[in-house]
Length: 75
Image 1 (cartoon, one colour):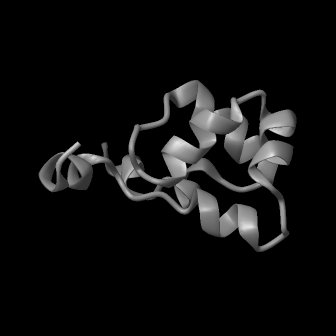
Image 2: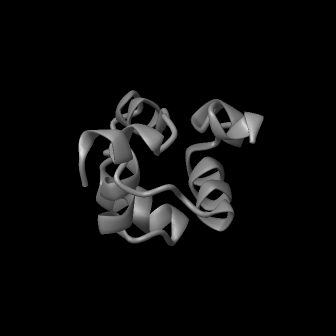
């Protein structure tokens, strides 16, 4: 993926919200049902999460979805 394609993936705060309470990607995967490899791709902005993934991740971290994925709230 080149730089221009990468910039099209919306920003997210998933990593910031996961690291503060010291939750690993593996633990988040267990809590949310989203695969750890997919969480890594989302955090690194290589893929855009589906609505179902956004809901699961926000519930697992007990944060509002719009706070975790602020650019997507405007879509």
